[in-house]
Image (tube, rainbow, N blue to C red):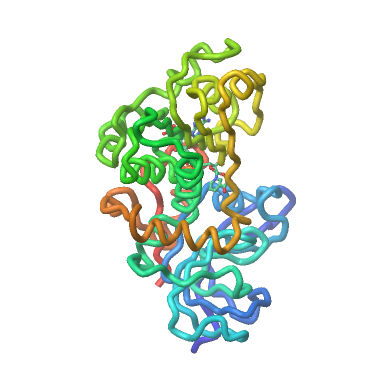
Amino acid sequence: MSNTFKALLVIQPEKKVFTRTIVERQIDDLPAGELLVLVHYSSLNFKDALSAMGNPGVTRNYPHTPGIDAAGEVLSCSDGSFVPGDQVIVTSYDLGMDTDGGFGQIIRVPSQWALKLPVGLSLRESMMLGTAGLTAALSIYEIEQGVVKPEDGPILVTGATGGVGSLAVAILAKAGYQVVAATGKMTEADYLKSIGAADVIERNDVTQGSERPMMKPLWAGVVDCVGGEMLAAAIKSTKPGGIVTCCGLVGSSDLSLNVFPFILRGVRLIGIDSAECPMTHRTEVWRNMATKWKLTALESMVEEVGLEGLEDKIQSMLKGGLKRRILVRLS
Ligand SMILES: NC(=O)c1ccc[n+]([C@@H]2O[C@H](COP(=O)([O-])OP(=O)(O)OC[C@H]3O[C@@H](n4cnc5c(N)ncnc54)[C@H](OP(=O)(O)O)[C@@H]3O)[C@@H](O)[C@H]2O)c1
């Protein structure tokens, strides 16, 4: 086996300046860990775009290879948890943050970060889903466990054309829910309907009237990827007993709210943390994505690029301009 592999490397040539190049890296330079994996696919997530731009809230040490998602084949495992040739998924924990990540052809990580590829998914399909799929599925798991049923009314998904949003639309529809997709890109309404949205609304329609203490109750549940005013408005418009999941901050990390939706309607707000989600829970949710929530339209939801195509996609993602999820081919 060669000791070198190809990777995207973010370097910091001077203070506050970060540049990205594709280089040959040495396996010996990877961090310590029991598990060495030949990465076949990764995917682009918002956190990767932040890491690639030098965001200290995501990555503190450069040079660095981002990529919070990786799926591939085990090359070696020093603690015997896996054998060479096992197909594994590694997402989140510290991968791609301060541990070199999936935008390299080889990763070395603690073996507890990996799970066996569930039966029913290929490595490629697993990264079409990636952390975005895991986050969407964790949100929907909470809605189901909170006993919000399809007959209780529509589920609102905000940031609907994004990675988490589009997969939430598709999985919710597969699970039998009526989905209302809120987007800033009404030109993508037909696409959102093609993946399962029953209705598509303009992002501002959600927030209209949000200065009021409470709004008309519309949603049995909400999968929010945006935060800020959008999340506050969604909570104020949730029906009694409804569940709102919160995973993202593309709009804002602030949340200006009163307690009325909670004490007068019993609305439940649930935070989603895919990064530190326990392995047992993670495994169950991945199994759902490989079985009862398996999506047939995944291929239409992604655009595939090699490492060379990543720079453009990172820039588009930071401008909120991506129309499809980005699958990254490493092999
Ligand atoms: N908590 C977790 O475990 C977890 C895991 C994964 C991701 N996340 C977070 O979830 C969020 C979404 O991630 P992603 O990977 O889906 O990102 P993404 O692919 O970039 O999608 C974000 C979407 O949000 C909408 N949007 C962008 N800027 C906006 C703005 N200023 N105001 C309102 N809407 C805006 C856009 O959709 P429309 O044009 O359709 O509105 C965009 O496509 C991010 O904040 C990410 O950090 C959290």
